[in-house]
Image (tube, rainbow, N blue to C red; front, side, top):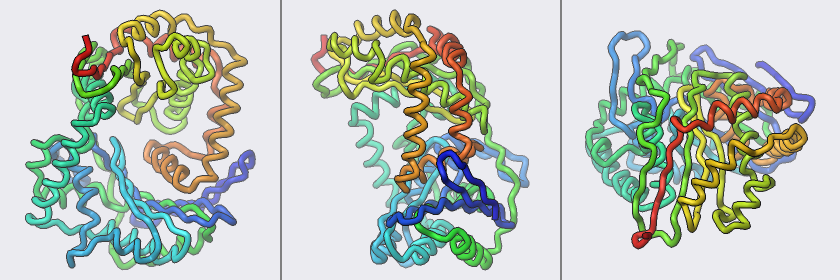
Length: 428
């Protein structure tokens, strides 16, 4: 068992890695009533082209298969539903798939050992048949069509398709109606056996628990399953040009006011670990200084009626992609675009503002440990990008005003910028 602490925030992360490659991590929170547990795999919607460990051939699978697989994991061979198993123990459960990972989770205030056992077992007990796969296609097709009718979702999806020409991050996580119709049980088993191997996964538990008790339980659970360690999966991504695919994309939908999003494709990709964390912190601080709710630019755009309180500016990314998205509702998208183009390069970036925002960020990280769910989500996101959660404050402290200035100069350029608009049906 590895024990690492951050004395500044007074938190400790306990870690153990089993012979199968499975990593177990525990953050003990004495006195906290809720326990939150996750079982996550480094497998997301962008992992559609890969080489299975031990082979040389390239595998291509349909878009949306990672999300489809997540849905199917909850169905039991006897026809039962895993959600009911958790509910019978007084726990809530869920799962989600993003671009780079799939996470199964539970939250409970009692019977932690029993709930953890259910989590470990159902994620490692797939059951796919032609009949239940066909049934799921109808369910996910309805989900996809629902997303197609959601203006906010279309705003973001259209922007990603405009920014990216080849990278699969441009595609909806759930795939398309056509792509999911081609999924078979054989494909699901193939992806499961490749990406749901323990060496590609992590168990995370936080709450008032004893780390050694969690480790002992997981060791015992895994011992009878006979997993051997597996080599790293070779994930293949197409070459992505620096320039955007389209500079502008518009769609008309039944909305009361236009929805606007300006995006910038990041070309500083390929980072992981501390370098990636530093880059993401810099980008986040840059947007807070440029367009955060305490910024002058935000106040002036708000007073002019061009934005409202739901306007946001944020950066998101992984090891193979990254982008910034800024926007929300606006009554005049053309004027807002013009104002942003003019103002963003001219904002004065001051060291005193950066230090104030760094202190605010420090407080948010400390507060993260007060929410088991938020801590679990952030931990898994960081873990699969080789980022150490406990190093966050050290990396944050190293950020300088020159880092932020350089980020703005290199990121906010015309050739990596695209605009996505959702306009009312009767908008002139």
